[in-house]
Image 1: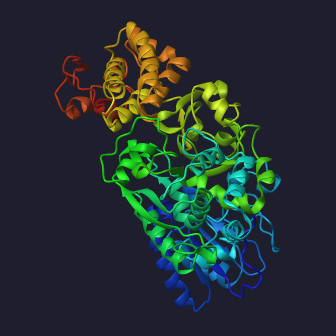
Image 2 (image 1 turned 180 degrees about the vertical axis):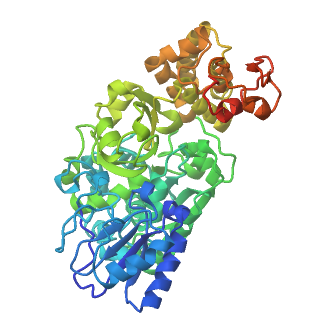
Length: 610
């Protein structure tokens, strides 16, 4: 664990507040203003540091207080009304407010890990849980301050590369490290860079894919909002390795804060000589600009992304040639995603041999996951490759809320697969996930409980893929639509048993025949749910029933006569007058009129509606 404690030279207290999108969405701006006003009111001198996401999104707004020479304490769920007490008692007098704090241990001396005792981080100092290497600066530094980044060793990797390493040396270091692309397929980074370096051209391009479009994914956004200089530094090093002449960061326009911070980061890097002509007097020149995408999921695919940058419609191109030979404007091009580039400075500084010791034999380093869905500790985690699903869900994730039972986890977004409870002890690495029917993808980790219908979940993701298909190739354009139609019919009780065989055949055909990764991976949720939850499909088809009662079209409402008190609450609240009865007779639901709005069930105080 890399320590980012406030320096010993600090003379006054520091108040650190999470100002990433998750924090701002929870009200961090108001808390920030309250802190400023309260410090002035109480005449207390303290430094206020806005920072990125520390990962515990479920506890936002997060406010950390650091008293010189003492442990950093994190307060969770902070509201403006709590600020006066925090300022007076902790910042002013040095007394921790234990019922506000997330930390369970309060040590007066400095420690290596500021979140010791916080279950979310799960024994960081013992390397049993999270290891914050790539996220080491997120939640610690001011992302808008290049001075903060430099103080933590920022741009030392770039200086090392430009002063003592050849492009071939850099590529060899990436190859030795075993770093694989964190954007989806896991292609070896060093191999990709080496392939591009072999082609001579008057222009070459280095591209960063920040078009994070998976539902439930926010890893790249958090890195860009919390440590943008690390991404930029890795990108410049990659540009040097392939002799790129220009670079683009393709970022989603839906990430306004990330785009804003990236623009400021690029300006600061140019001003300090880390970007532009003759970088650090090395003779190497590179400039980078931002291209804002319009939110098309398919533009996360490399060639569609390049078409978009060129001003064309975002649609994939046929390959070969590969992008490393003829990519952006038919010039040799390397494309990596945000997390991949953020790994690069760390590898250069620590060394490939050191990095290669983390993870598994074929999947090196750590991986960042966004935890969402039916999980207590929704947020962002970074774990070594090989960590099991169970460790993430129940140790860092805290398990399932409301004492519900774990049912499945969707790993890899709409292109991933749903893995059941029987695979909880499976390690998370590229090969293991593919073998189980999922994929690493960008790192979205959506947990579902026993109340979730897996047929409906497959329909949801297929609906996403069908809507996001660019329409260029028939297998994806037509195939995903046909699969969506079949899944919709099944969830409505109109499916037939032959539909299951058709779905399985279509999964294989679409995967084999589609032009790009969107179509090739679109069937994964269907294929994995058919593999592990086929009984739910059969229940929808044979019994015309959803085992979880999630599919509204299959709901059947009846009145339990012995419980009905003839109060007529259901009759009065039915919007389509589908219930008849009087104060002298039991209510009756006319199924041919019922629109299954659930109001009768909600309004009955005697549980007479089933």
